[in-house]
Amino acid sequence: MVVPNALEREYINRVIFDQLCAARFEDDSRAGFLRIIERLIRDEGAEGVILGCTEIPLLIKQEHVRVPVFDTTAIHAAAAVDFALGGH
Image (tube, rainbow, N blue to C red; front, top):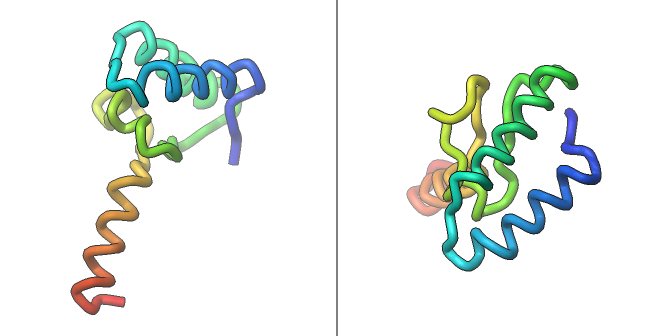
């Protein structure tokens, strides 16, 4: 498992709280997230990306990234439906 560095985490946090939580979805912010993701793939060997905040999938989609993207909001929702339908 690899994580963004301190400066990248600060950027991600700022975008989440200053933009995404305010329903602002800016192309420059998407580009910033994609630069971070690409660096993690290239330099750290990331083989997938976990979108671990409910707001991030509003900005980043699978079609933007060349490795598998795991949208934790969708994963949790699917698990809740499965549980509710007795599939646990």
